[in-house]
Length: 89
Image 1 (cartoon, one colour):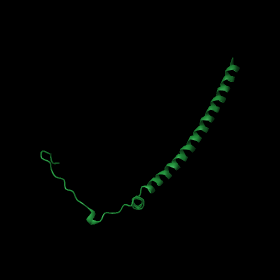
Image 2 (cartoon, helix red, strand yellow):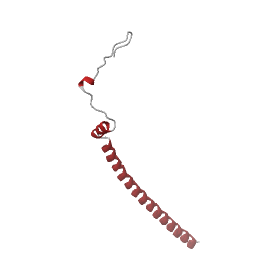
Image 3 (tube, one colour):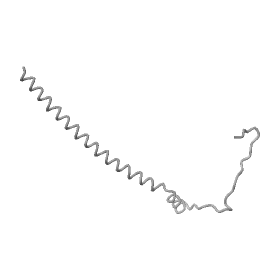
Image 4 (tube, rainbow, N blue to C red):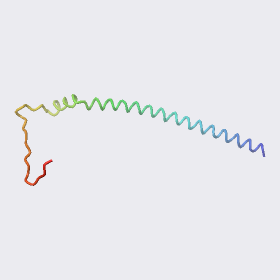
């Protein structure tokens, strides 16, 4: 009976060691994937910052859309008028 218990215990130790190693390998793979994704995230943030700069937006507006800053004579100021019964803020 004792030999059977020792054998079962040995099999359990081998099995748990094997499962532990599999879990460790999986953990290492996930950590590598995390590191790769962090590097990609950093690149994307830099790219987003570059794409969204004001100078780039202004250049694209001028070049592709033909937009320009309005001249002084092109600016029209519209004053709001109060409608009777409307509350003022």
